[in-house]
Length: 239
Image (cartoon, rainbow, N blue to C red):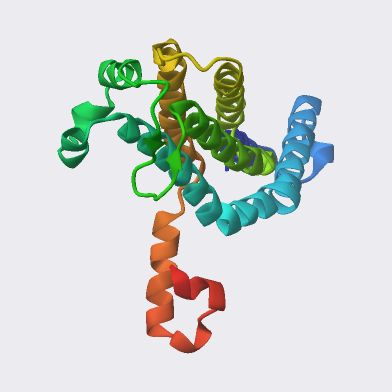
């Protein structure tokens, strides 16, 4: 439940309890101001309960069902971006990657060093592209596909997350158009745009972790299933 809603519920509940204890339940014996406050409190409590039953519980249930899909989609987006930058690096750099590999300056350096006329193989795959432009376009299309599917779940995402997905789609489109209309030997004119993609995906991962906090719940489901295996549901056996 959102904090402001929980606060409003508690305030109204306390108002009802305290005023009822002081003035009793008979409205004929209560001052007009007390009657008005109680009516507002009762209406607010009823509205909050109605919202919880008709909106909040179905929304949280949907978030629970789509938790793994969303988490995996964002993880795959990050892998696509990371693998693209790793493909720009030399073999010795790939074999000795540290946390400093993904800082902004190093990512820009890697992009600046790419030869736009040479073939490029994406790491961890057998795919060899005729040039880095084709590899980048293919990566952007894959990212767009996953981002669009996530936007389709906008009713269970925060406004900030939806905004970040919009920024990601816009950045992907910019890079795709630049790659389609220019095939220069110098690839570094795309460096800042590619670094922006990495920054956006990092922000997206952080926001998704805030939107979906079900790890403990899944842990309890696992414990329950171990203790009572006969109650296992098919989809839960994979957690």
